[in-house]
Amino acid sequence: MSNPAEIPQPAGPAEPLRPALSPMALALRRFRRNRLAMAGLALLAVVVASSLAGIAWDQMAVMRGQPEPYRTPQPGIHPQPPSLEFPFGTDPLGRDLLARTLIGGGISIGVGLAAATVSILIGTFWGITSGYAGRGLDTVMMRIVDVMYGLPYILLVILLLVYFAERTIVLRMLVLFMAIGGVSWLTMARVVRGQVLSLREAEFVQAARALGSGAPRIIAKEMLPNLTGPILVCATLTVPLAILQESFLSFLGLGVPPPLASWGTLASDAIEALNPVRVYWWLLVMPCSFLGATLLGLNFVGDGLRDAFDPRAR
Amino acid sequence: MLHYILRRLLYFIPTLLAIYTVAFLLMHAAPGSPFVQEKGLPPEVLASRMAEFHLDKPLWQQYLLYGWDIISLRGHSSIKYPNRNVIHDILAPAFPVSLTLGICALAIALVVGTAAGVASAARPRSLTDYGAMIGAMIGISQPSFVIASVLLAIFALCLRWLPVGGWGSPSQIVLPAIALAALPAAYIARLVRTGMLEVLSADFIRTARAKGLPERSVLLDHALRNAWLPVLGYLGPAAASIFTGSFVVEKIFAIPGVGTHFVDSALHRDHPLILATVLLYALLLVVFNLAVDLGYAWLDPRIRYE
Image 1 (cartoon, chains in turn green, blue):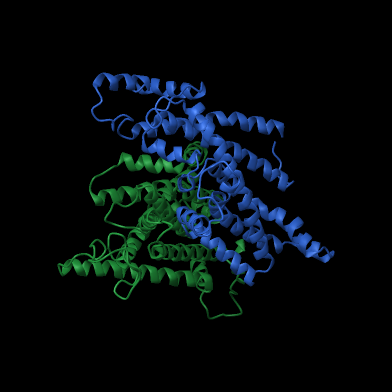
Image 2 (tube, rainbow over the protein chains, first blue to last red):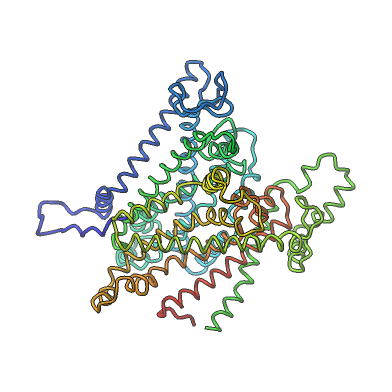
């Protein structure tokens, strides 16, 4: 976000022994020098590691035949504030909030990654086809994107969710992933198309065409390497949006089915438990700080990638 | 210019028609009818209800009938609010509420976002910069229902400065407007900052400084005007979605706006209401996109429309 333009790396006489770096390597180097982006990456690493640890903890309990901590009520009066026994406290049903926050992290991050994957797959395909084909097909495909933009996305998500309404938890989760991913590819398609349009006229693509390369080869060998940057940036910025969308759906009661949890369902449960008499702050603060840290990290990394791949932009 | 505006207005028709068509098809692809939940409905009643909402007719007839019902302002809500006219009784009272709230929220977002963006771009890497950008990051990194609830808990429940919710008096607008403004303010701050940093390295800024203009004038008159271009592009879709209300904010602050209808109509498969809300949103979107394009020409005289 806040790094000045890096000076282009001198190539040639100044350092004769260093081999020429590819644009990708240059971009990665610029990214590594961006302190804010690296801090974001570190933050993400911590969150992901803790979520994985949470899942491992849960699986160990399953293997030992013990009750799973994230769904098993503890004896006693609840909710309890953070203590040595329960570092994050417990929820109104007496479940360990630490376990729920960590498991919820796995699910929230999973939603984000799934949405990013779907948007990469559909958006890239759509953008490349539209941009490369040009003319009539381009117009039709882009008008479709415009119309999809014109629909309130919440309507799309809800209708997708009811269309694929399933009983089993795994299928419902899958539908949730697909529904959120299914509405997040539009921006990706526009970005990729714009890039393809300018690449199509680039000299090296014309040279490849003059040498007799067909469309598949030009797309795979000449265009895709140049599209990696914008796609990566767009995908990184899709993840936080998808996580926020999942939390919004949780607020509507359409999120991950209980007893599973995501940061969104935890936060919306905490809001429901909100009352002026007793303040159960830990119910809200714990999942929301994890959520905030993740989104912060993702935004830093996304901004850093954008700066790294497009040094002229700053 | 007038020619351009007229042509754009003409384009509204096919755009809205396409959006209506897609919404109609999507709505019908979703399984179940609005009356499926009403268990034990006698078959005759069900049949008459289905006939009332054209659900017994072939798809193409439904398509035309629903469209005609909306254009002629006759569509009735099917399930959520039985026998109420979608336009007259549901959207017409709710839209001014959302519009008022939306205008307040957008004004807050513009003022706060622009001020934060300019302040942080004026002194990059200073304490002001980091403070403003961390504030913006918090606006972006928390779900709106958390922001709204925390505001409610602090200012209405604990400090008791402002009412908890409802609609009618100016003091009831403050909290929901701030909650609604948080996300756009954060985006605008980041866009303005990025735009300012880019513009501030341009030659005409150096000229402005060299001829001795006060820094204030350089920043606000020369730089901001150009840095505002990306904000304008963001504002079009943002305004359309803010003016059509937010389900979350309306739910938490008990505000009778249109945002609720977007979610409820879809959840209840209330076909006439779904189509009416979709068209309302789409209409606002195309109007604001046109306004944005005209705004570009106003901010940047080099842009001309034929």
